Image 1 (cartoon, one colour):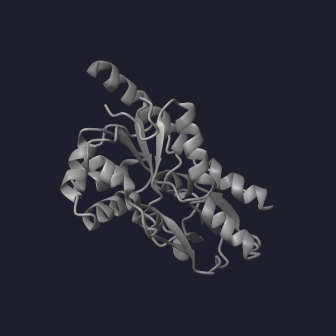
Image 2: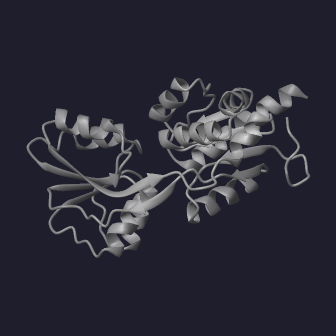
Length: 255
C-alpha cells in the first residue's frame, strides 16, 4: 500500500465528484474515515437552461437538476414530484417544492418499480442530465407511460482532470470510488490522454474499486476494471464507507 502525498501513511482513495459542495462533503467523509482523499473531479455541469414541461409526474434524478429548476423559477403545477433519493429530495424541498414520491431503492430501477403501477396511461417527464440511464425511460415506457425527457444539463470532463490516473498508473492509488458510468469513462479518457491508459487500469485492478450501482459496475467491467464493492444503498456515503472498509481488510491482510 502507498504512502500518501501528504507525507503520512494514510491510504489514498480517489473521489470523482463535481467540484462543488459534493466534493467538499466527499473529502470530509473520507478524511473522517481515516484515508487520504485524492480529489479528481471528473464531471462539470453545463446547464441547458431547459425546464420540465407539464406532466402528471415529474421525475428528478439529481440534486443538480433540482437546483437548476429552482434557479429558473420552475413551478410544478399539479404534477406529482418524484425524487430519486434523499439528497435530491432535500434539494427540492429546500427550494420550496413538495416531494410526493421517493423510491425504496435510490436508482433508476427503483424509480421504475415505484412508478410502474401508477404510470400506465400517465405522462411522465424525466428531468435530468444528458447521460441518464436508459433503464428509467425504457422501464416507464414498458409500464405504459407517455415518457418525455428534458435535459437540464450536460456533464463534461473538466479541463485538467486526471491526476488520479497518474497515481493509479504508478501504483500509488489504494482505492477509487466511481459514482457513475460517466466518471469511469472520463477516467479512461483522461488516462488515454496522458498515455497511461493500460497502466492506470492495471493500477486500479491492484487497488480496491467501489462503484455506486450495477450500471456503473457494468461500465467498469466493460473497460477491464475489476469491481470490488457495490454498496447496498446507492449513495456516496454508503459507497465510501464500504469501499474504505474493504480497503482496510485488504491492507490488514497485506501486512
